[in-house]
Each structure stands twice: as C-alpha cells, then as structure tokens.
Length: 340
Ligand SMILES: Nc1ncnc2c1ncn2[C@@H]1O[C@H](COP(=O)(O)O)[C@@H](O)[C@H]1OP(=O)(O)O
Ligand SMILES: [Mg+2]
Ligand SMILES: [Mg+2]
Ligand SMILES: [Mg+2]
Image (cartoon, rainbow, N blue to C red; front, side, top):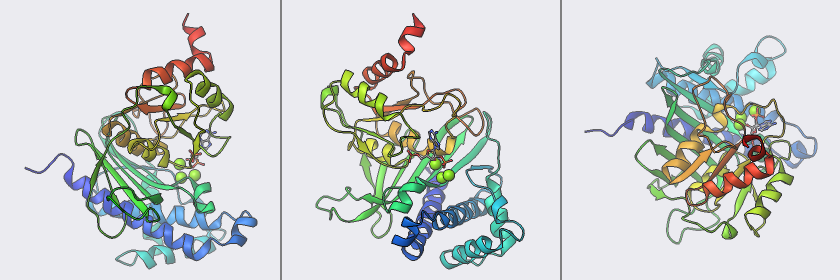
C-alpha cells in the first residue's frame, strides 16, 4: 500500500529542490556587494519569477488538474517594458531545468499561480522565495510549497538553502541547505537539500517552563511588532534574546527544537497574512509536535482564498507552552480586556 499523498510528496520535494538550486545559482551569479549597496533588487526578482516557473511547470506536468495559488504573476514580464527581465528569467529557467521552455511556456507556468483558493477541492500554494530581504543579504530564505485539500493543509515542503544542517550526527556545522517535509499524520522530517538525502524525523522542543524559552521573530520591524514581543517575553520570564530570522525558516527552527516560540504580531490593522507565507511551515510545525494559531490561539484558516482573512498575526510554539504564550500575547495586545 502506498502512503497517503506519497506521489505528491515526492513531486513537491523535486520541485522545491529544483527551485532552490535555481535561487542559489542566481545568488552566486548575480548578488554582489554592489547590488547590496545599491539596494538593487533585480536578482531576487529574477529568482522569484524563475522559481515560480520551475515549480509550477513540474506541478503541471504531474498534476495537470491541480490549481495553484502562487505569489507572483507575469505582469511585469510582459510587453516591451518586460523584455529585459523576461529574457533573463527564461535563460535562467533553461540553465537549470531538464528541458527547454519557450518564452510563452515560462510565462504560462508563472500564471498557473493565479488561482483564488477556497474551501473546496485541492490546490497548491507556493511562495517561490519567502524572505527576499534575507536572500539579498545572504541570510535565511525559503522556497515554500504546500498542498491544501478542502481548506486543510495536508502536505508542506520548505527548501532552506542557507539553513545549517543538523540532521546527521557529527555533521559539519558549516554545511548548509536543508529541506523539510511533512504530510498529515506522518510526522515531520528534514534532509539535506543536495547530496545524501536520508530523512531524519524532527521534533519541536518539549519545554514546559517559559522562562527557558527562546523565541524567534522577523528581522523586519515592518512585519512584526518587536516592542510588543519584548513585553510578551517579559511576561513569560524569557531572558534569552530573540533570534531574528527571515522567512518561514522561523517555522523550521521551531520544528527542530532550535526555538520554542515564533511570534508574528500585526503591525497594521488591515494586513492579511498570505496563505503561501504560512501553509508549509504550519504543517511542518504541527507534525513536529508544535502548535500554531493566530494571536487569539485560533488555528489558521486556509479556506478563505489567498489570504488568512479570518486570522490576525501568528503565534507558534512548542505544545507545552503554547497556551501560556497565547495568554501573554492577549494581555499585551489587549484582547483579554475585550473579552471581559
Ligand atoms: N506588513 C506586513 N506584515 C506582515 N508580513 C508582511 C508585511 N508586509 C510583507 N509581509 C510579508 O512577510 C514575508 C517576509 O516575512 P519575514 O519578515 O518573516 O521574513 C514576506 O512574504 C512579505 O510579503 P511579500 O512577499 O509580499 O513582501
Ligand atoms: Mg513570503
Ligand atoms: Mg515571496
Ligand atoms: Mg514578495
């Protein structure tokens, strides 16, 4: 008997591996100290489009009926104004892929990601590069792919090209490149992104004392409220400094017990989190034994289209401290008063 979603798991891993390879190639070729000082974002934009084309083309080949909710679309690659970027993206995709794709095919693959999402049937969700700022700094970023069935995330894969490998006993701490994968009910695993791909099961920490906790949050103060997380940390008696990491690598850190809490506190009343920013990390943390919710502790609801329209912010933590963390978040954000 084949395991639930076995083929989907295998194809999703292949797609994320290929896209991660493309991103690393772009970083090595195009990101220089001069792109950084000039704040030139073009390398990450090219990699973003290229990675979405590669993943969507592989999904289309194996699961032609499945719609995709992808972050990017081909608008900026169209017409005369898009020509230069379009040529670079097509060349890039063809330098990595196993078969040659024409211009139309590359744009068509990117635009398979236009699906509106929703509560019924199955669809994939893709963030071709999550953590674009981390990518440009040479720090953490992730290629994130998940499968949602009837509104529930059932499969997630994270490709983390700059994440330290910790899966082999005695492995070189300088070796980077980790892939994490989880299928509903089957646990969460990590493996090397390239080379020997033996899988090792991962577990969130079993912490029950919040004073011993390490928390992680975004590097960007525009994406989360650093001042409020400091107050929440004080309430929980946390003394260790927060670990700031870009992208869904925060979920990866939690899933393998390197951090115990991930806080994403809304900076603006009108910001709706995108499903591709959380779906893969969500199932990986849950299958590793952790818990994920919004600032009220309610589970994230992936059935409302392209955004998490019914949720505000994200709180993820080891199961033993999740309720205490949510209570502290509520005290600091004022939710407790509103409920009285
Ligand atoms: N105001 C915001 N609040 C929360 N997340 C945001 C906000 N603006 C952008 N993002 C998203 O945060 C993600 C990066 O998160 P992190 O800071 O944890 O690395 C990106 O996917 C980015 O979306 P986008 O890709 O549209 O720029
Ligand atoms: Mg993102
Ligand atoms: Mg992105
Ligand atoms: Mg983006």
